[in-house]
Amino acid sequence: MLSDMHNEPHYLAGLFLAGRRVVVVGAGTVAQRRLPRLVSAGARVEVVAPSATPAVQAMADNGEITWHQRPYQHGDLADAWYVVSCASDAAVNAAVSAEAEEVRVFCVRADAGTEGSAVTPAVGDHDGLLVGVLAGGEYRRSGAVRDSLLEALRSGQVATHPEDRELPGVALVGGGPGDPELITVRGRRLLSRADVVVTDRLAPRELLDELPQGVEVVDASKIPYGRAASQDVINSTLIENALAGKFVVRLKGGDPYVFGRGFEELIACAKAGVPVTVVPGVTSAFAAPAVAGVPVTHRGVAHEVVVVSGHVGPDSEASLVDWPALARLKGTIVLLMGVERIGEFASALLAGGRPADTPAAVIQEGTTRNQRVVRSTLDKVAADVREAGIRPPAIIVFGPVAGLSELG
Image (tube, rainbow, N blue to C red; front, top):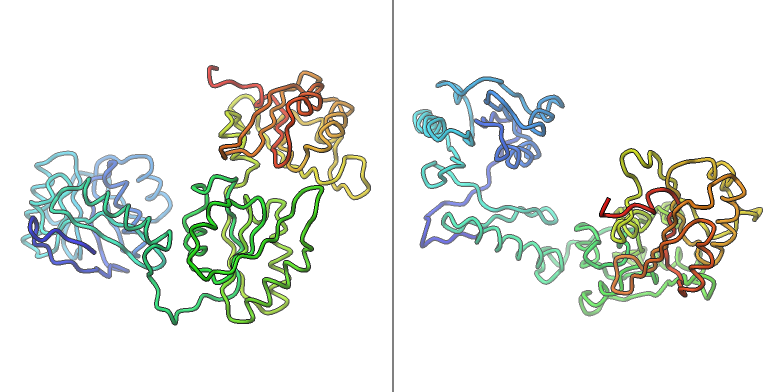
């Protein structure tokens, strides 16, 4: 924790509130922001307020907090260990602060921080650390410093773990659809601590440049319709390095379990006795259309989304997809790995009864600077993709949502 001692001589301490009564007066947007961290700390939270935001009411309905639906009254702070006063009426906050002084319990006054007996720092979590910053009441400054610290911690620029602390086994990390900023916070944190990174061509390449020196990078690229690393070789690479005491991150594009063979790798590691941590990622099946202005669902337009693999054709004996059934659906079909056989897939849908004028959208390398988008219809999309020179990786969307425009 940091504090600007020149402006505000606070004594920084961590409170253990698990199982202890905490009173929050007020149930508006300020309380909505403060409550989740109190609940996650295990506090026995009681909220006193005549009305609440829908989010606060949902927390009460779910049993996460107790809501006394009435105005604050003197005596509400009895047996409390900590108080947060965030009522919309300053007079109520002043009364709460005064009672807190009487019963000798620390009180945060949200509307006038310096008039309470405690203040809430700008806080954030990272790998078991709770980072808090105080800046003498300058909340924008403390928030900015907090964000910078967390970014440095998450990127690995600031070491946070003892050298002798080892992470076990393998982490299957979804890197997201391509933009390096779309990896999850947890994924980026584990990547910064890897001894070995086994990556493929769809994983965000820029993330590799941020790795600390000495990290071994193994290229397990699976280039469609070209050379490919055997899945058995990938599995053995993960297992051998993990059994050698190294922390291995298997960095994948999108989500590890959305046509990413992640579960195959988990099974192989489990059989070898290697522990695996799974970190979900933002799948390109939904992210790429989103950034291209194509919502995969829209009220009154699509009530279903089906994600389909196009790595084999619709007439292949190896296909597990019921294409006639898909053609009868009215919602959205998202096709991955389908560029090379897009004509076959379009024909299968047409033969199954999908209208020829069904909108289609093809997004190449979505979320990256190389993104390209082709808008078409089911009967013309194959020719339009060829004419535009679209190449993998690309996401194909069939359905009414592909014809929507942000202009309505």
